[in-house]
Length: 140
Image (cartoon, rainbow, N blue to C red; front, side):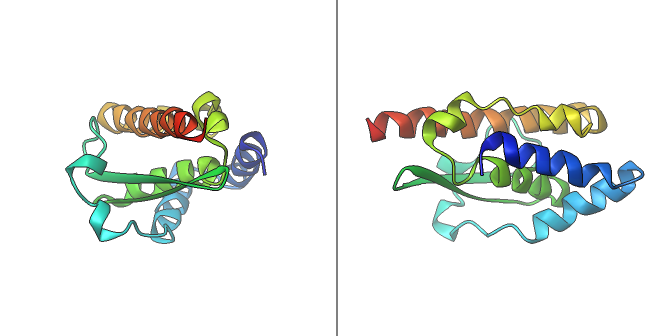
């Protein structure tokens, strides 16, 4: 599935929830199902700077696709990174680097996060795009 197709799927899923408490519960559930990052990557090099919580992110090029794994010490943050991984993992480095992640605003996520969590979200997106750019160079 393309980045756009996955985003449309997420927007559709979030439209079923009546209020933000239900949406937060869904985000928390997504975090519980996040494939855990290998313990060797839970280090300073894989820690995303700019997040209030600790978030570790690892990317690996498998064939033509980038596979992400992550973990966080905060349940909401873990759910947010799970959403981002759902959209970007399995995509090409170029598609990751160029992705317009409009679903974040479409589902109202950014406006329902505290300023520090919103900054963390931007840091997560930025780091994933940096991985996309870096792995694009490796692939060339």
